[in-house]
Amino acid sequence: MGLIKTLFTNCAHPKGRMGRAMLKFMNLCHAPLTNWGLGLVDIQDEWTMLDIGCGGGATLRRLLKRSKNSMVYGIDISEESVVKAIKVNADVIDKQVFVQQGSAAELPYEDRKFDLVTAVETVYFWPNLSRCLQEVHRVLKPSGRFAIMVEVIDTNSKWTSVVDGMTAYTPDQLKTLLDDAGFVQTEIHRKKPSYATILGVKP
Image (cartoon, rainbow, N blue to C red; front, side, top):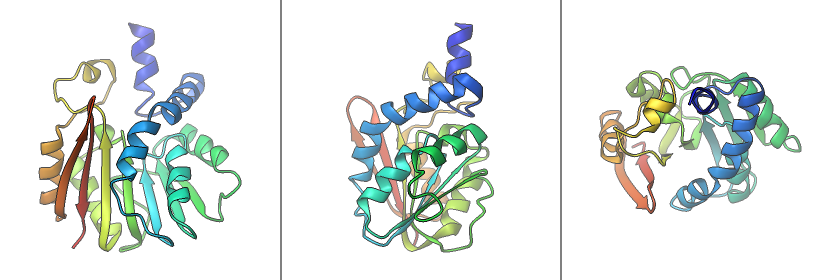
């Protein structure tokens, strides 16, 4: 149990050899959720987009493929994640894809920069989630969209005891938090087995 706990706690902040293994795992295993969730967003060409908690960088590539002539930014608290995301996007890094280390609580971007912000399997680990959502709201353009994609949707999930620092939220709780942060047209989309995408728009 100790080894399993150590391995999966690397979901929150990948470090070292186990962290690198987890990043490969996440790039592969998050693909179905991410592709489904992104399909719910009417992504346009030439958008400027941000993936918070970009992990191994696979979502950055998926965003790039869905929007011609786009600019895609990624941020992650983990140095290991930043290194992996840069490697995965090496052919377009600092041209169309820009990756840096940082926290969702203090996004290092100017106001009204992004058309779309995504968060795939990461809000469980955001400190002071309400503050982070206000930051997302700040960096979005008017009419910009925010897409939260989660697979753990039960507050009593066993994963919260396996992964240190993890807090699970129901889709309804996330929708309420988006509403409170000033988002409008908030929607919950669900897909079996437990996928959920919560969408919000900055007015």
